[in-house]
Length: 320
Image (cartoon, rainbow, N blue to C red; front, side, top):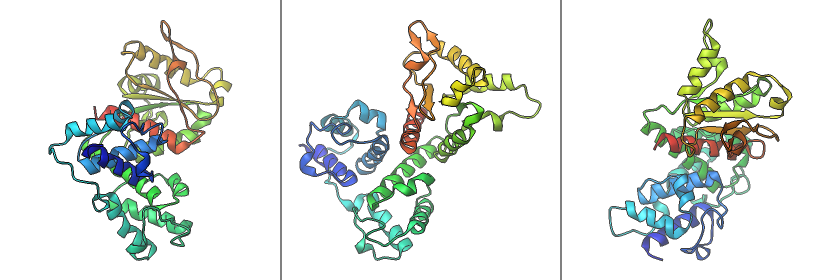
């Protein structure tokens, strides 16, 4: 390995708990390392923090081999000399005093693999207060659902990293992200509101009819304008969608299809979401292209994973 490759291997080993000897230049960081969509956000942050470069999850998906990824990093490095990776330059050093103060323990007890409940005697309330303390200390937002998945210090560090990266690009965009139109049937309102709240935590502006259409306004015109101007269209499908033969959502889908017919095929704009097991309608977009050929996100299997997939697409588009 060259210096960049060795340092990248150290970063992956530290952030994801992988044995350094198992990481080679031929390692596929997505498949062999089993990285989730959340992990790709974390790896993007770790690379940017360590090498002082810019790289996003889609770039990692395009260059998944360690050799390819390290070459892409090396192209952005100003200096020809690459310093070795050290824990002292990582987010862990900033996170440790926050944990120590909130859980009232000494910093020396805190290791990257420390278990929050077993090693520190923390309970659910302690974890809740710790998450809040991290949000305050790092000026970020962490979804409420994350609390249940926090087992180790590394888990917490990953979510702080994602929050910091989201805050960084939100600030870089002037504090406002692209508007996203959300289409749904009324029976799914509770799930859709949860989706909207999670997107808003990442600073994403959402257009939802129940909030945006003003009294006395022509709602059909308002909806058409919002779809035409929106940078993304999220369509929330469910069994309730199929149980209603006639619904406003189908009218919104037809407007969306009209817009897609004017767009380039490769542009990502329409994001189908499954709230529960169901199919996507096979409405024709153009010859040989149908709505159900668009890759969907399943929120019912892993809600947080699905949210991170949606957010990563929106943020990538926003910053390109």
